[in-house]
Image (spheres, rainbow, N blue to C red):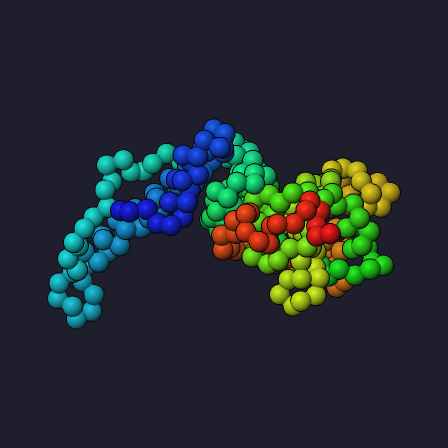
Length: 246
């Protein structure tokens, strides 16, 4: 069975010596998982349509080809923490292969990534959003920034100094400037939001509190993760100085 596009992208990165062994092991694990799923699904379909009869059809379907199962299943499902470490390194890389594999991961197993759902809040002077934005640190774009941009022209790239979450400023779909960022999955126990810990009980649940504060509505409305079109860092939207356009 020939590999599909997602497996090809992952295998290419797995052979790229630019990445360390931990990152390459993470993409290999996902590539193997995708291949195992496809072979298992093909075997099940062959079994169903090749041995059973449906309705008035007198004979089952003739199976012309079967997947090679000599090495099936391939090893996958390794230590989740090690896999997360590898995907964390890929998300912070600026290599185009990292952008491509990160888009596959967003659609295939987003729980391996260190960030939550994509969220947008409008750029509004004199609001808590502006105070939050002042704390962002300008940075060069990473693979996570490229996937976050979703092909939109970007004014500036940032990183949250407390959470490490990528953030950017863009016009978005409606033409009005917005802050777009990944919702943090965890927060430090102390910080500038209020006088003490991040919400009741420390870091757990603090991300939801911050999202609620930033949104000018009753609660946060994160956009769901989805597979995104490949965005290479050397294309025109990324030719801007660190932190934004002059």
